[in-house]
Length: 395
Image 1 (cartoon, rainbow, N blue to C red):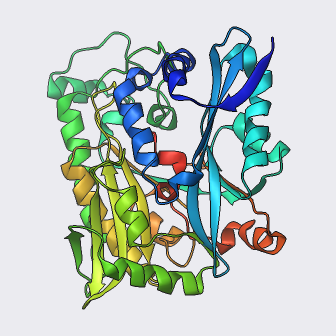
Image 2: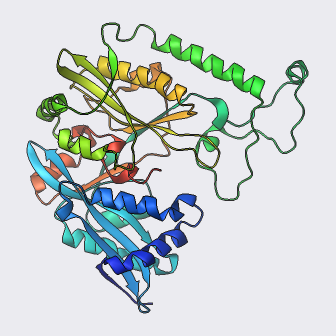
Image 3: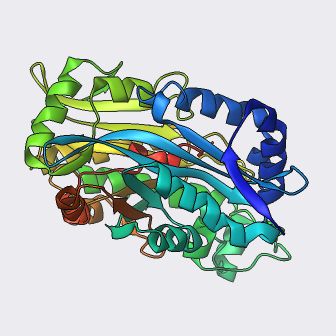
């Protein structure tokens, strides 16, 4: 089977939509064509949108059998402003899997610099084969707020009699880590935890959270911010003076990233101020309900002045009641440990746990070898999952 790579044209869009629904037929979101179109319109409004590229893989019959985009983003690397691209929306029909290399080769021959945040080993393998290097893995911390995502534990017979519970055929305990992951297609539906047990467990979690967060940041006030003002520019420049590598998160970027047109809207922005100066902020997102009827929660960004871990702690603490009020069962926080982030001790103290088998990987390839050497070490970065393309497609 032969296939060629060429730029995407407007007439390719129906074929591209068919490709997506074929590759991701088990995901209902793949059939939401209007939503996917809105994401691309938003990407085309990026300040560097003239540097956005999209390609398709076309077979001999003129069918679209693959797609890849190069989305632009500005970074500050060792004091220099660098435009780098991220491979995005990479998909190929299985029978044309060998030709996926053609798409990625086109990407690396077109762009000068690459910064990517990926999870799939197959994609990472293609990127590294063509010159990108693994800088390191993001940390993935999670916090349980609601037991709805947990399997049903064995309930002792005396407790069942006390609560007047009936046996439920088919309910069996499973590993909690497995339940926190998305269920595979056609998996058996999870039996619900009985309401009386669920109420007791969730009430216990709330009491535990109040105890864990007590005494933190007594002199710091966390407020909900209405938008991004000039104090975010000031904070970014202070961070850039201390941290060698970071996305350029000035006001212009943040207003674009979390604008009403963004796929992540609406978000909640929490901030800590000292007078007119911003000490740190967190961007929180609650997704729409999934197939199990539950929301998901993400800390998309948490950035503080370098060394202000006390600010990170109170931002983490105050994110919990916000998410609990929204009824989410679990909070997800993916980030690189840095002077601007939370620390492991803070996360453990507030009841977060690590999920080391489901990490995102940061990859870099910069044309300037000196800048590449600096960027090719996550110890030099301030980076959260919302800073790049990895969360653009979270519905």
